[in-house]
Image (tube, rainbow, N blue to C red; front, side, top):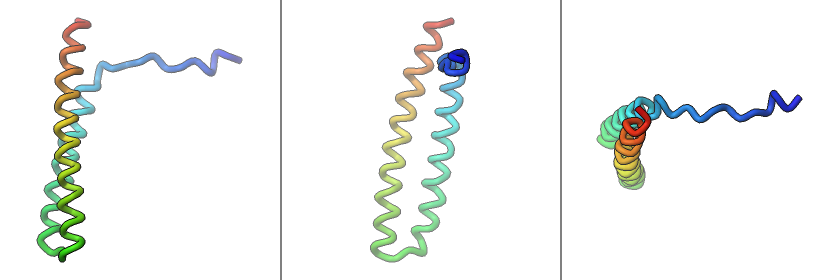
Length: 77
């Protein structure tokens, strides 16, 4: 019965690829939001700008994590 409750092994082999996809998706969302901002008014425009700033910060974090993961993968080879 306890055999079914085992945690999955930590497979980090594709973390860099997943993080790179997240960067691309986030950059696409920023671009789409900027196009939406062209037709937005004051409060909505500011909300979009604020969200895009958080997205840019997230991209910076993803890129730092990519570097860490890539360094870790080299250490395991």
